[in-house]
Amino acid sequence: MPATPDAAEIGHAGLAPRTLARLTFALLALGLVWRTLRYLLVFPIWGDEALLALNFIRSDYRDLAQRLENCQIAPVLFLWTERAAFVHLGPGELSLRLAPFAAGVAGLFLFWRLAGLVVGPLARLFAVGFLAVAIWPVSMCTLIKPYSFDLLMPLLLLLPAARWLKTPHQTRWLATLTAVTPLALLASNPAVFVAGGVWLALARTVWNRGWAARGWFAAFGVAMLVGFGLAYQVGLGQLGTPAAGADTRGGMTAYWSNGFPPPSPLAFARWFALETTGQMTAYPVGSASGGSVVTVAFILLGAARWWRDGRSAWLTLCLAPVGLSLVASALHAYPYGNSGRLNQYLAPGFCLLAGLGVASAIDRAEKRSATGRRWALVAVGVFALVGVGGMARDVMNPYREPGYEWMRATMAAIRAEVPAGDPVVVTGDRPLLDVVFVWYWENEGDRVSWNGRPSDDALKGNRLWAFHYGPAADLHRQLLGEELARDDAGWRLVKTTTFDYRPARSKERPLTCELCYYERTRHD
Image (cartoon, rainbow, N blue to C red; front, side, top):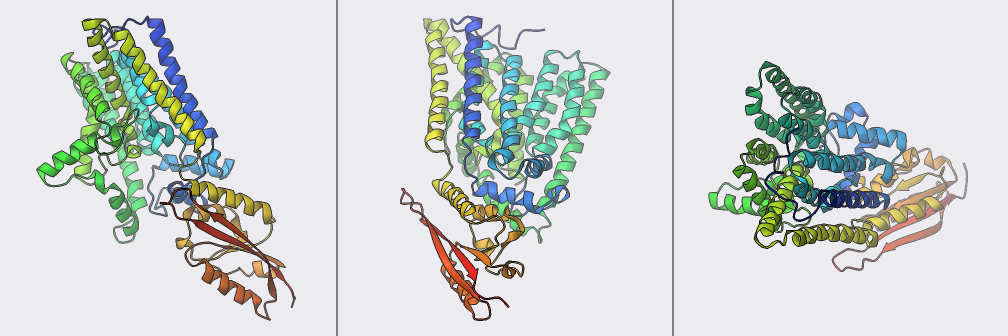
């Protein structure tokens, strides 16, 4: 097998190959531990997750391939996986986050394998570090959202492509690529940009390899078109027609708006610079509006190294998806930048090039002053510090926002107090309630009545509970109490339990809800 592309040009920074391998495994293990820790901390479900998860209650597999509720779009294979987890494992956080977590772990190991194929040991060490302890890949694999699939599926495309570029006489890698492409595109919407980048990266080499390679390459192109066509049809169904689906289309446009380029050339240049150095390249850390400029500098250094070394195919493999996503943003089809969560499909290319860039910089330092070993260990220490610091933060604050932890604790207290068979009426209009409370009560099944109106079955018994929350809770509590207190109704209020949340930070609003218990005093 040929040497890895940069093995001949970049040294080992004074570190033995076995030491480099051990350090790489240490960073890989750190990334795995952080992902596992965050998964097992069981962060409470938050609003964005609940908006999507409600579809698993209300929709079957066929419905999930059509329009979703709550202004949501997601790849169909991800939705089916989550629906299966909901049906067979239950609605808990661990069950619904199991597939994203598994995808995040698998993506980390596949990236480690990919880095071993395309860069040398020193660059592989840093590339793995960039991905292993980056907050976006870690956090995305513990959410009920498809973003960890957006990292895994591109890797399923990049690995066989890289294997074939290294061993172009083995057409089985083109066959593998052909087989996985439709599944990848149905499991990740932006994976199509990576598939397009793979096609561009392989085209020149394929043409020089004879008809067997050309045939499989043509089959890969067909598989890409078929997968994209099916995914596109699902996406159209989820968006709905412009009239019927105006809420979803408008919501997506508003959410993605910062990722669409402005028309003015000067404004475009500023927008492009800020988005490129923003959250989309935040590996291992970074922020919006230029906060990831250091990582981008290493990416450019790595790209320059491959360009000088004539590694155009590898460079295309990593950067063509960036160009394709920029074209899509100009068409308002998919955002460029905007948020780290929306750009997980670009992480493999960014981290490979950044790792190569760091290795190149250390190699230069080694040749000038024999300080490469020191800088290499400093870089490893930085990655380790980021990972350990991230874990410490998650342990101290195992929630996205403390208000969601209060909601989960409140529902746990309510379930402990309300017998399982007792009916509950939730007052207030459902759209005005916090979606997380809606998610919890929807999972209580038919015993829950909505909009402050007890069902006929609820009024047949002798016990009734009412949950009051939202902007008009006082009014709805009064109206329900007056209705139940009528002489012909025969109910009396027995007990009221109040649950309060008083935030420590002034920018958060306090939250309050009440649980009222009624008993029937007379029977017809």
